[in-house]
Length: 564
Image (tube, rainbow, N blue to C red; front, side, top):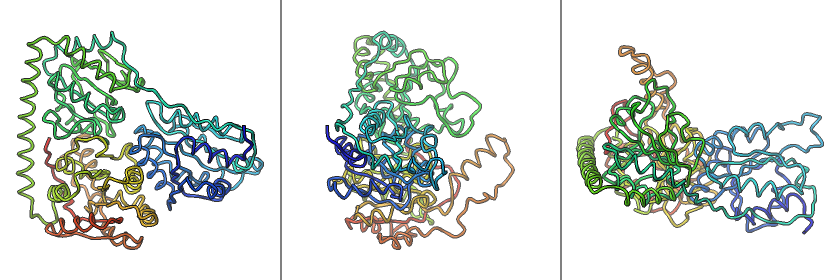
């Protein structure tokens, strides 16, 4: 054992855990910790100008790096600023250890300024939340925080460090959390029962979610989809849960309208893998599935299995391991006629997908020279200009369909999108991704409204010379609010006559995101003519420095074409 102060113990534990990048916004309550960092040059601190930006960077880093990130915020007021991004981490299952300083415990009876119950503030959006008041407890708390964060279903944890805990001293051993071994296989009986149902399916559908990508199960889910000849939909697609160019992939379900029910209609079996069944934002009165549809749910999150819908077979396991077992038994048990039927189904699904893609390409051509710039032209030019190794960080919101139709996301780590729905993630998130993947080009595609939630991220990129490119979809409005208001009027109220004035949803004073970028020391370029898109993209990508391409696009409400 060695005798150390609390602040030294915290720094030593970070090094032991391999968490040598810190994303934070410092405050006075963090003074002891900030002081000790100068004695640990191997630990790099990335300064954010606002707390949500710090947590957003940490989330991007954790997702791209595949292990828990560490963020440090400032007491109650600063922590409150970061909770929106903590919410995204919790809903999306991002492994994060979030910390904050708190008031000296010797001041508790005086109701100190800025202090609060930080544990209670974060409890509902973390897997585990605690406050450490003694230096001797810091190794235990840090080990548990990292262990909880990286254990599936992964998610964030929180530790509050009162000022005096950092100066307190204790004799401790610095021992990190153990490596995790999470390849849990499913119950063999459950696999057999699932195969018995799937092998007889005449119209099977697979629905994938983000825990497929988190498990590294891309190859395995493709294998099973091809074996059973299933259409594949994504309930969420913030990472590559299925190759988007695969002929059996039919896109992302819109769970906020009855469209999802229409797309799932007729399925006799639904194999749901690594996904909630189902999570939506808007109320949809009718169930997404027919009562006769049998559900097989495979997931690393036990609480999601049979949470809402009756389930024929539930398989609690690591998705990658479970899919391997499922494929092995399917090959043994599917009859020759069942295998031939699966191949026929797959071919038919592929033909349908090819027709959808052909119709999409025709729409791209039709709108090629439109003014304002069409979404289809913007995303096609982006896809054709960027390096094939580019990682896309996506918060394009209403532009997402065009992005996914233009860019093939077929490889792991080629896409990271917003999870949870709290806007403002992509501006800082792409910085964290680039820190984790310095050898890959990183491009964030973000809506103009979303960009302003965490625009301070531009300063951090400039300060540390982190070469990311932000492509802004500038439709001069909160277009997603207009889309949802139309759903409210037409679908919920059944009112086809009322014409909305979209109160508070238009940016009558347009957002000059490229001008703001210049103010932060970042290259900014506004594009208003379609023929200027390619030169602007090429210039930004060639700089080797942070850059913003602010594209003024058509913001009209109209059906978005899709290649799926």
